[in-house]
Length: 449
Ligand SMILES: [Zn+2]
Image (tube, rainbow, N blue to C red):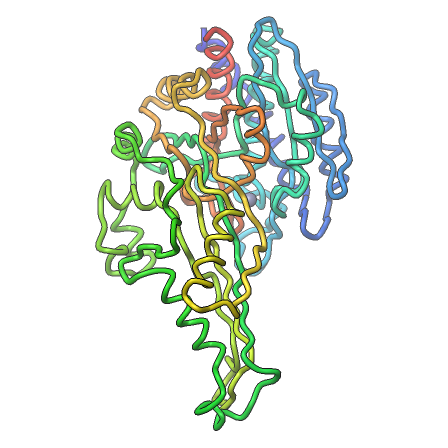
């Protein structure tokens, strides 16, 4: 049965590709509020073209778009995507205009083509192809489009809480995902969480001549001493009770790692590092990357860091830290553990400010949507998918899904060199068409699951 619809998709490549070009030619930069109204109009029109009546939901920031499509079956599937993009800067590093999509060597280059207009449209085009070939969809669909993903999804939790019936589904396919350039599609079942902290210390009323360093305390040393109690040289995090609430790594979790393609040599070469932390390699390396939390120093600031020398004794120091979390770690609890740890080690003068927090989230791989996607990926791409129990990064998935415990999968039309957020963002044109086919396969299989 898929043969017919796959043929239709192949016969309409030009049409689907020019739609993608149109979308990418329209800037929609959330952080500078560039082109948002025009983009909302374009998304609305495209929804209408597949018989979905768009509902524009205003927020305190950029509006969200919502739509439904009734099918013949009982199942309800949701698509979550975002129509906003990152700013294109630095412009002189782009080989072509970020908002004039160009195809070179089988790849389309444009800001937003990967993150995530390509995936957004692959889903729309799949619905279009289905309607043209078979008529009514075999299941019910919900479309949720956000315009503020690139600025941290400030209204997504509000949306989920205000409109629980709109997201009540048998599962959501999240914004996007990658394929290994010479390998299978990646399907992620979750994300790490994050606790973002700033640690601040002040040791005097004002900066002083550094001759006083013999007798007046230095805040940078204070901070360095405090930080050195938080992690040892083997990368073990020493914050008391930090690891207590983490889900245990199961045999199945480790089994998934075996199918991941991770080119250690090329990453070492690109990053110019001799080895990974603790000389890890193979499954152990992946286990640390995906199933362990981090305690990263994102930036340290104190005193004079300009050109040449200045002999100064600073009075303040601060450090920004992003701590990536594993289910069931909780960002607020982790911030509290850091405060407790510092107090216990005599650093009660160091203030801990939590700048943001996101919970980790994981979907059970045994649920029908996950099983559907695994089978369809193998069918469409001809190779078993690489299953990520959780991605190493973080998104607002938990805010959206946890109350209803919705299953969520991430997969899309990007590849590991898609340059999201960076100059020369791109996808393989072929991945876009494969992505459309993948969604049609999911529609069919999930409807009958
Ligand atoms: Zn992004």
